[in-house]
Image 1 (cartoon, protein in one colour):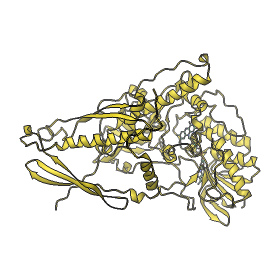
Image 2 (tube, chains in turn green, orange):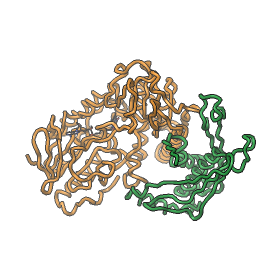
Image 3 (cartoon, helix red, strand yellow):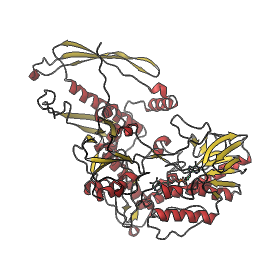
Image 4 (cartoon, protein in one colour):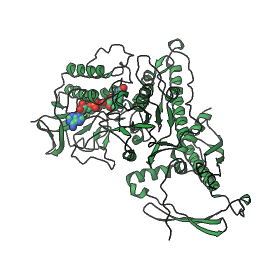
Length: 186
Length: 423
Ligand SMILES: Cc1cc2nc3c(=O)[nH]c(=O)nc-3n(C[C@H](O)[C@H](O)[C@H](O)COP(=O)(O)OP(=O)(O)OC[C@H]3O[C@@H](n4cnc5c(N)ncnc54)[C@H](O)[C@@H]3O)c2cc1C
């Protein structure tokens, strides 16, 4: 059922991506990016994050607009539920990263996508964050991602898309590998 | 002393180049720090056999008898084979001569060795792709009390303390060493990064027979998506054994080896493992199945049904639902870490500005980015086969032709000389 179309259009400009890859291979300094977020406490467990500027290609860059994200905790934690929990935002970040990768890889492989849906589950024993049991970690004990993909491709080709997307994903790497985190005050 | 070309290294690649230059009647010497096949004599573990069958070492100019064409040479047999080749082609090898430096001089090079200097017009670097182990930066953080080894210093399990062993890397070296250590009674934890899974035999033939016939080994460096990527791909998960057995991750877990993800760091005495193992094994299975499908497609149009066995599927790689994310190196459970994380060449003696930002010689299919400088015996130098003994014949043929035209007219064949017929 290999039905590769010569003109798949998933809305990804692969030529531009490949051009950027080529240019950055020549000048690795330009590949040094810094991503930023700002966060402000609102009240209770409610806080608001904004993203606007970042650094890349040797200069300060700016999103088209400032994006904002509310985060809070649900009412069963005695919170007001003004937004997603931070761990749900992590799941959203993982899904967005993998899905973007799937679209880009599909475009590169000339595979037309029709629908891509991911459902994610992060299992967590909250005895960790509540400090009930020191042997239980705070974070997820595991994450499962389930993709439903309709595309003009065989099941193996679709699986290969999803596999390649994990291989190239920043958030997948951030979650599966340790990262040094330095938190300073003032 | 003067000569036209200095070949550095008397492994099979330098020797094949010697034969090809002789065919062009180009005067040359082969400089070798030890004796012929020095790497195979001194840098390999005791039980190692080639993973390529005997027929797959077709060196140019001397059709040597190979014994059982489907067998796999031991190290002494490999050394003897390369020695016989050197003798058969009458290669002008200067043994026990180490090259200390190569620098441009006049319109050629000055080669300084422990036995005097050579002035020449061209140099062929054939010093091998695996001179040094390639370790991740955090390898230095193994806690005191745990011994670190590389496949270069590993000889056999009896050299290791009793107790657990962490083998890092699941390419050919890592899986072979992991197997024999596990069988020696030392429990092995194997850290698995990106790897290339293939079955030893498929449809009644050796996998290398198929890859040879189907044309996989002939893929040119000019045809691949990213030459940098393919040059870094791990070796095939294979072992050469008299019984032609499979050695994949399933075989290892069957023996009791514990699999963990790619090592991401060592912190506070704990080796941290990536959570990407399920994806890596799935990717390797998908790639293997694509290769087998390509073989099936080729077979159905090139072979009669009775020449081969019917297609069969291969069991997917089994991994635990939640493999461990850390290995404690301080509990006493792990006594040894073996870094089977790959090899790199040592070109530190080459005093010519040809290196890229990662310290690799810049070259176009073996024609280095300095006039009259050539490179042979490196992974995917000109084609996939270049990584193997069997690849030296075609690479030496191509590069000696280029070298001959360079000598005839150095101005015409500059650094960016176009390459000759690829595959
Ligand atoms: C563990 C292992 C298993 C392998 N198994 C297989 C296999 O099954 N089948 C296969 O086809 N390939 C195999 N290979 C790959 C390949 O054949 C080897 O990398 C091979 O050794 C490369 O051949 P070569 O002639 O380029 O280098 P080498 O055989 O390494 O020869 C280089 C020579 O250069 C000499 N030298 C180095 N530096 C200097 C210097 N400064 N001055 C003078 N002399 C110098 C060395 O002493 C050596 O003799 C294996 C490699 C390894 C490491």
